[in-house]
Amino acid sequence: MKKEAYVIVLVGASTRVTLTAAQPNLPDHSWPVLQSIAPMLVAAYRWINTSAGSEGPELRNAISRGSEADDDSVVMFPSVRGSLALSNQGPAPLWLGWTGGKPPFTASIAQAGKIIEEVEVCKNVPEEQCVREVLLGNIKDGDEAIDITVRTAGGSTWTRKVVRTTLKRDEATADSTKLGNLGIFLNATALLDRGHGEFALESARELASIAHEYPPARVLLDHMREGRVP
Image (cartoon, rainbow, N blue to C red; front, side):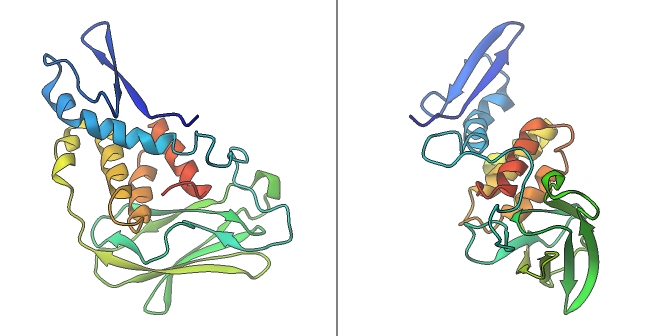
């Protein structure tokens, strides 16, 4: 039986309301902004337990490990077949997470054939302790596409061209900007629901900015690293 996403909201001093896809409404006396984003909360937290049902394989563990076979390939955003897209504005670092491959890794960003940043991942770290993710520094504003590459110790590479585009917030998430980390989380999950996964990288970028203090964002990044989301 597949589990369904739900959100428990504290209304007033002690009243608890459980929101689900079938029952997304809060009592009329509740905070108007929260009332307006209640359906978004349910939609957002659906991504958190997207792999909780019996239909999907279980996560191997909290650390993203390589394959037990001899395959040295890197797997990142496996369900996204088209181009990845990134906002042409905003200085937030770029988050990458993947499974597979033999450490250490080299992750890089290039533009017009020139490497603008290169970072080693899991250097001098035992494979069983290697967390396969990295933050790459501030990407400058601009419309020029970038190329991201992850290279394994064995020489295998994963590379993808990332287009730059203007991203506008959906009207549904406009009020979420008043909600701090929750608002950032809602906007990031709304990006996952747009298109066919092409905004996953931008979503991860926003999630990474709050992951250290907002646990649901960290959970969702773990799902992304494991290839469960989008």
